[in-house]
Length: 73
Image (cartoon, rainbow, N blue to C red; front, side):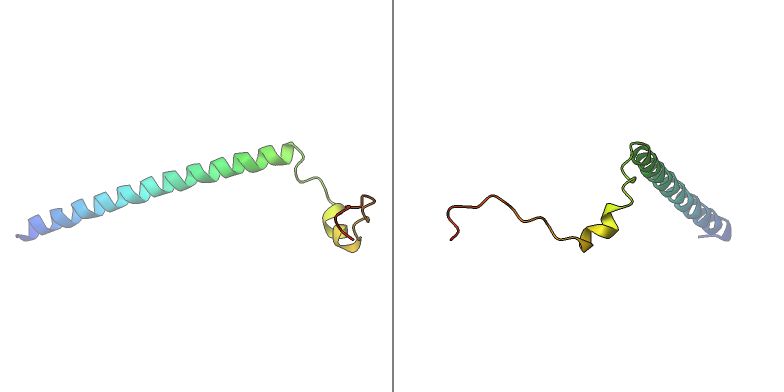
């Protein structure tokens, strides 16, 4: 293989490698946009508005049940 043929071979390999990087960048950017849209929609729907109960839930016991199961003695 001559020097010119070798350089064309490496140029072709490099060009195809760059297209894979571009495809991966486009795919990861589109996945990031989908997650960003899902996050914004969940914030707007009020899913993250409960500020009180998560930290205080562990401090309080559950209320005892008034229903008694007849099978338990």
